[in-house]
Structure formats: C-alpha cells, structure tokens
Image (cartoon, rainbow, N blue to C red; front, side, top):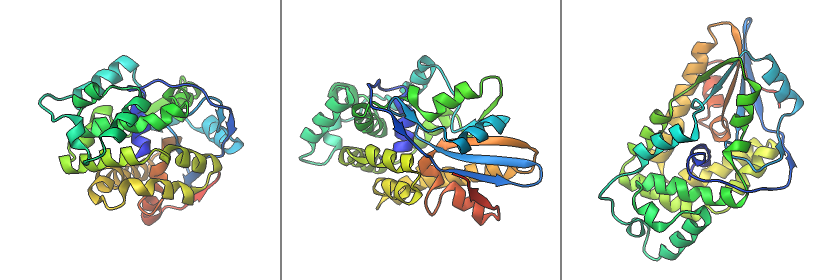
Length: 283
C-alpha cells in the first residue's frame, strides 16, 4: 500500500494516540538559479506526537520561502470527509470478504479491528478505499495522526504567506477511482500484508536514509506496474513539470510532498535532474 497517500487520507478516516519523542533529519533538496530557489522536503503526512523534524536546514528553508506548495490544499475535516465519502462509497459492491484472497478473511478481520473500523463499514467502500482505511491500522497503532504531520506544522509556520497545491483532493481521489478493480484488489492485498511498512518508512525518513526510504516503498508496487504508474510515476511527472515551470519566475518556494515521491528511480528529484536541473541535497 502506498503509505504516502494512505497517510494523507488518514485525516478523514481515523484518530490516533501517543508515542515518545524522536529526533528526525528528513531529506531536503534545493533547486536554484539566479532569482529562483525551490526547496523539496519529503514529508510524512501522519506522525506520532513529539517527532522533532525541523533541523537547522529545514528551519532556514521555512524562514526564507515566500510560498508553501503541498500535494493538496488544507481543508476542514468536515469538508475533506465529505469529498472522501463521495469518491469512496458506492452501492451494490460485493462484500469486502470476497474481495480478498481465499483464506484471508481472518487477516481482514484483524486488520479492521486494528484500523478501528467494522467489516460492515468496509463493505460499503470501494476496494481502494477499504485498502486505504485498513493500511491506516499500523499508523493508528503507532500513535500517528495528521495533526502531528509535517503538513499540519507547515500550515502554521506559513500563516500569512502564500500557499499553493499541486492537485486537489478530488483529483487525487479520482486517480484511485480510475484504477481497474483488479488493481484495487492488489492494493487491498498489499495493505493486508504490509503491517510493518509504516514503521520501516518512518525509521528511514527519520534517519534521512533515502535508499532505505525508497526500498520501504518497493513492496507496494512490486509486480504492480499500473499502481506505480498511476499513483507515483505519472504524478511525479506532473509535479516535476510544475516545478520546472515555476523555475521560470523569481521567488523562493518550499515544496513539501510525501517522502516517497522524492526518492527512487522515477522520483521528482530524478525527473528534475533528467530535465537538466541541478538538484542538491542540503539535508
């Protein structure tokens, strides 16, 4: 299950509890020319309380940027929840128990309990939405909450400054709805099998270990090229194009997106480098 998107949707699906404080050093990159400076910060959308990730380099980027760009614009839980329901719910769906592999019903029930949701509720969700909801279980167990996520903190730090988004929540959820049912069921199977994935990703992000971070997302897409293309590669291409166009205008911008989008072969960072930009890691 692609945990970046899952955590982004967690804000409208679940609540969470606490965890001891941790010092983190998330990776930060910089692209610049004579009059434009863009920082790229890989985020975790839902964090346990007390994770300290504002390193000196990140703090400087926050202070110097005149604009914050995130994946989607911030919205109230009520508005975000209504949009999620519009895309996630559908009538006439087969029971969720028949949308998992034979013999996985007990695993499904355990995952539902961990996520704090009933199987009956899952029955009314499209398969991708059930996958997103169940994948939030390990985050919930870790005490992660979007209220503690990087984007929530940045929203406070950038109060009074310009904000922009790379896509809307509706555009994001439409990507899921466009997935064939077979691909959605792969997503569901990966969510059930990925109980330790959030902890692995979080540890790599906290350490600033980009290789480990990229590897932590590997199981979500291995053998599922349609998922990788729709949920990662195509979006990375659009976002790197946006950044390339933004480099034509003066200013200082902090782009904060899920950490998985900035690491690996087809990442935003790699795509910008392929376009001829010098992308320097500063943290």
